[in-house]
Length: 126
Image (tube, rainbow, N blue to C red; front, side):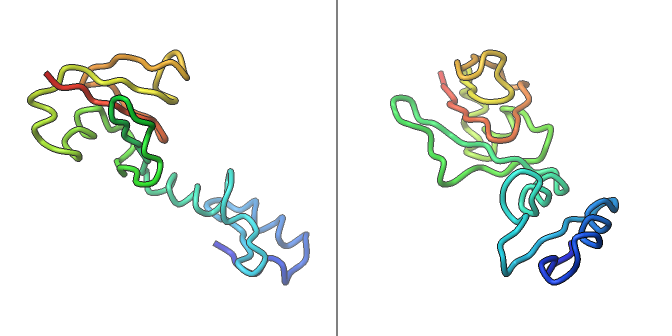
């Protein structure tokens, strides 16, 4: 990560930005920190982490406190993170988001369904 890009020339910024595994930012001007391709997004990507949101039946999704899981996680991994009894009493889960075939319509899935970043999940038990 290169900071203080506001203090150097545009040619040098362009050269640094094109190098492999680099990110150019300016903390003072708040440049390239948030947003697509920014530092925060790159950190999530490089660490292989995803945010999964939960939804209780009859309520709106809780976008304030995501569950953090590794890339390639399944519904079972998410359920285990919430509470172990969810897996043994699992009936099905509804998923909204990138891993759903018919987004924004929810998709009914099983424990082995792989989740995607920013998915919303509602787990139903027996």
